[in-house]
Image (tube, rainbow, N blue to C red; front, top):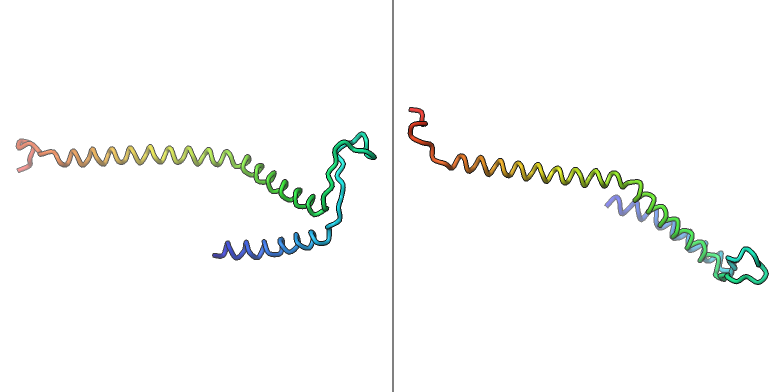
Length: 115
C-alpha cells in the first residue's frame, strides 16, 4: 500500500510536467540526419519537439533498465546457485527422513531386544 502511494506521489508530478512540456513545445522541429548537406538533407525527420523529448525519455528508461539488468547478473546467478543448492539439501533431507522412517518400521529381532 505504501509503495503504491509513493509511486503515485512521484508519478503524478512527472505526468504533469510531461503534459506541460508537451503543450509548451508543440512547434515542429526538423531533425537532420545528413551531416554533409544541411540545406537539402537526404534524411530528415520533422516532428513536434515534445516527440523528441518523449523518445529521449523512453530511450533513457530502456538504456537504464538494460544497464541495471546487466549489472545485477551476478546476483541473479548467485540466486540460481543458492536455489539449486537448497533443492539438493531438501532432497537429501527427504531421503534421510524416508530412510529413518523405513528403519524405524522394521521389526527388531528378538535377540536384540533389551530385557
